Image (cartoon, rainbow, N blue to C red; front, side, top):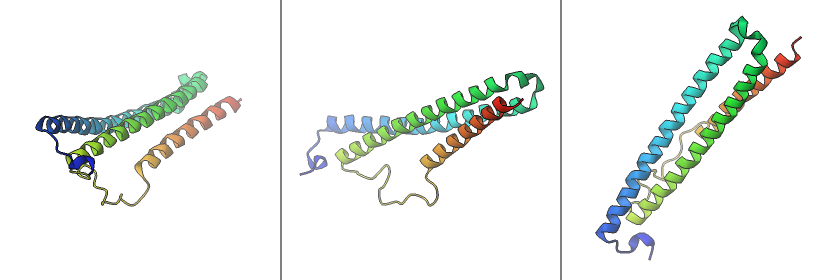
Length: 146
């Protein structure tokens, strides 16, 4: 006999449903937070990147600006990774609740295939890596510049 075949009391069902609701809300919130942070990250990079090359008064500080870009990229990358881990944790809780309630595969049906193309997780890592490499390249160019 599997876990979801056991008789659940009404109070158990209500508790599971509340856990399920909260996990779904939290999962959606983590996704929204992830994309909001990513938008902020791109905006900050665009602003400091443009300022680095366009504002001549900043030329003595190029090295420091590039270091700031490197540190900011690493920090946002870590935040993005941790947000993804929290999202995965909530999805596991959602699946566990669904299994106990006997409605497995309701939230994310396992029968559906992922869309074709590069997975979002890989794409996010590639974007962060590309921006980090760009800042490292800028830093090296500033250091080697006479």
